[in-house]
Image (cartoon, rainbow, N blue to C red; front, side, top):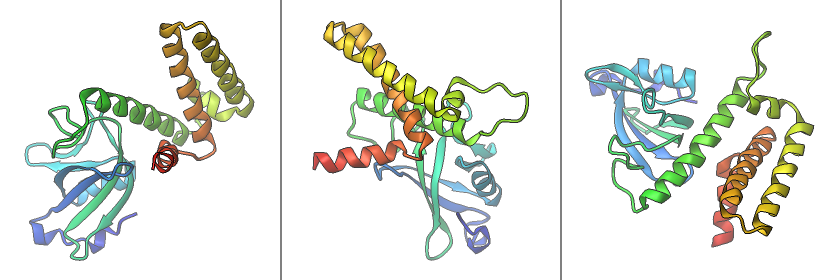
Length: 208
């Protein structure tokens, strides 16, 4: 993913600059610095670590839950900066904004995007943890990921329940069933290697 030996940490006094970008929207989320230890932890965990002057290496989202799942890491031509393309599980800025550089999205847009990103990231993490060690009880998501017939059966059932709720014009139940359909659809897609980003690209192309 990234050749740490090719980075010039000395040039920045032991650090390199990290520009973090949303891999789906291409929006720059934040700029921070990282030392070798922080990047080693990033590569090993698949989630972003940076370096704080007061805390040392820190795991983005360890407290807030707004972790950043690494999609790719690329060094610049001088080796003193890294472009981190990530799938964020929530806002990047401590103010609650999607980006530290501001955004044109409304609070509702940001909340909705964060919910879907967080859900997709959780499903991805559950999948990455398979197979489980002997004696470890799987989560519901992991049961679905491990059983093709079960996940497709549940997806079909939830779709029918959503259709019925819409036919009854029951807005509350329709919203609940819609959530169930989206969750089970994302699990079914993740099971065959299709990500939320893949779906978003299709919808973006259609919108154009």
